[in-house]
Length: 425
Image 1 (cartoon, one colour):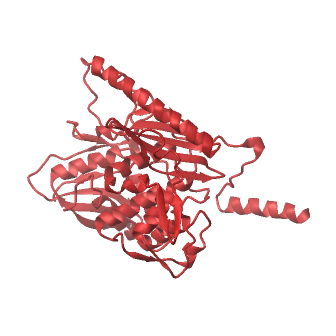
Image 2: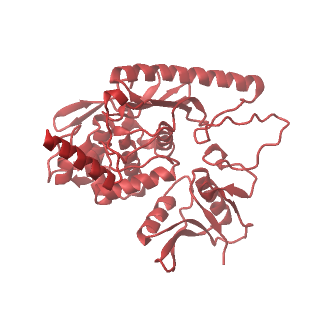
Image 3: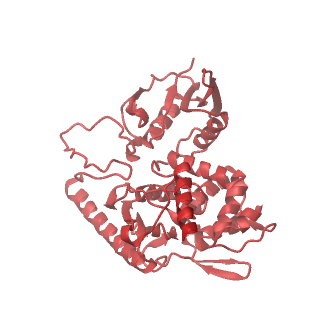
């Protein structure tokens, strides 16, 4: 008994020293894990919301981001589907669920993608992470950077598979953003999430998503489970040309989660139809809530009222079509004036200042290869800034038109990312 007490005290001291709080599941104080959201994938309007900004453990929903970065790499040509990837000892030792990959053997990128989307294989996730970034830790940094770039402001990734880690957190809202971004930016790879079975090494694996093909319109996305997270599920469904995305986190069991999700899908389409009816009747909806907007109700805008000429933080729909020359930046809540246009392709955007040159280069690479920003011709620049406490490094993308620079900064601002338009010197 004395040894047990000493062990408990030592463990508590270790967690305090590491700045961590152990996750417990004591029956007397079981945390509330539940959260859910439904969005209209076209308008990004929230059709249903429950605790959507509460911190939750994503579990294997994490693999959606692992696949996102894999699809990014495929689009850039960094890897090909038939590339052979070496299985490391670290990957082979990853706990289940897994394929049982052996160290020293290989698996193709295509097989690994299917293993994540269908089997939710943790060892295959590690193989992808190590192949793309050299290590799980470096890949996790890229995952978090990408999360911030697509507006997942409350998400931090520590590993590529979702196995328990107290520092790996997300929200239902952020998972909806990830699903929407996958559909928008990687639609050609979406059929992987619709795949019902996966054949590998003589075995056939069935997709964990039991609602796939059984609920009208459901055609993909991902399940997840750990004891700390509860039963998670992200779904997308399409009926009569209208697509919705639904997220449930913290279900009590797989069966109850699936039943609740099926109900949410019906609820989502019911609300969608009612909204469309309102639009047909009055050509407006009072107080629509956007996926990336604050949860506070919006003021009703009547036809005779002048619309607000300002881009609201975290509103994707507001990222285009505005006539204003001012963008509200989330960080610091400051207004950045966009300079007047010049007829030169010599404008730049500054996307951040970093303590290491490596992170500045990495930030430039992510922004440069974002297809939504359309700044492919830009040239990455790193501007060192000397100071007493050590240098800082400004990340810039140069050699683009004022129109492209302005549009890119507005889009980045709408995601909550700092951005400055730099005029030609």
